[in-house]
Image (tube, rainbow over all chains, first blue to last red; front, top):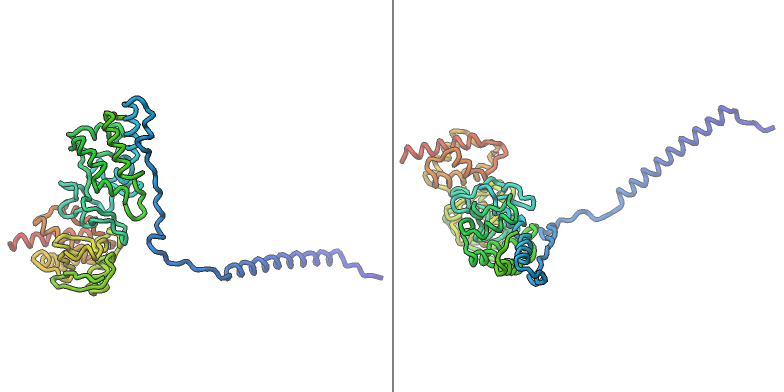
Amino acid sequence: MTRHPSKKGRWRHRVKIAFASIFGMIFVAAAAGLGYALYPRTMPQTQMIEDRLQPAELDRLRQVSDFDEIADPTVRSVALFEEAGRVIEHPRCMNCHPRTDRPTQTEAMRPHTPWVTRGADGRGAPTLRCSTCHQAENFEASGVPGNAKWRLAPIEMAWQGKTLGDICRQLLDPARSHMTREELLHHMAQDELVGWAWHPGANRRPAPGTQEAFGSLIKAWLDTGAACP
Amino acid sequence: MSYTLSVNGRFHDVDEDGETPLLWVLRDSLSLTGTKYGCGAAQCGACTVHLDGRPARSCSIAVRAAVSAQIVTIEGMDGAEAVALRDAWVKHDVPQCGFCQSGQIMSAIALLRNIKQPTDQDIDLAMSGNLCRCATYTRIRAAIHDAAAKLGTST
Ligand code: FES
Ligand code: FES
């Protein structure tokens, strides 16, 4: 005669199996985690500055010939200036055309740190000149940008907070730009401080296109009557 | 490459990569450790030295760009302004941890050489590039005023 386990005994057996499988699963998961944690893999390596910096994305500028199909010279002129405006309104240019006495910096155009002021000649206060930090060239080791002509645009040439049309009219007004049209073209196409905007160093994003392409757009805009948006 | 630097009135030959920050050469090669390394990014002013009499951040100047300059560090600083400021610094017990202080004094000397009796605003303008994590700013300002007053009465 076989002995049937009692009802109580069966339940005890089931509970034992349930606990054993829960502990089993925990043990397997812990063993797998430990195996994963201890599995050999390469440690983070030190990097050269160049590798750490993201390659700046290059934006292209449209060529003057791309606007040839616009028959109306005034419309063409405005279109040329709007394309050039992608450079003019770029942070690399805008940061040094502030509407206050303090420049801005970075892509976000935040107020310059340390706190500095333009001074009488746009090159800083007599006791805290731009050249205290900014040298004749970009300096990669500290990331500080530089150019021999480093300075702010005069306050009459403030661009921040203005529309592209306002900037356009301001550029053409010698009382505010302090430039004839020839000088304006030279400033845009050849000035080396303006040219810095395409070679800003570190991981700063350069202005779109090249200074040459930008200069060609400005020249074509002036040649087509310098119409403003 | 070899460069000859004029530091504190003496010539030093150093063999460095031309892109090495002047600060590293001063501290590591010439053992002039009075000039401090704070941020390495021209943000704090701890590394201020004088180049041809003008304050400059030595962390942001390549050694090859400094060869033609007369470099003066805190160790070589002398003159009426330096003495007056040092005395005022002691009198007002300006430093706390002291790390920023050589840079502060280098900027303050340049200020007093430019403006004999600076206002609070002049001081703010000249010293805004020198940070102090211990916030000794009010004592710095008082000491500069004190030094200026001393210089004013002694001339
Ligand atoms: S270490 Fe040069 S400014 Fe901070
Ligand atoms: S005294 Fe400590 S940082 Fe200025």
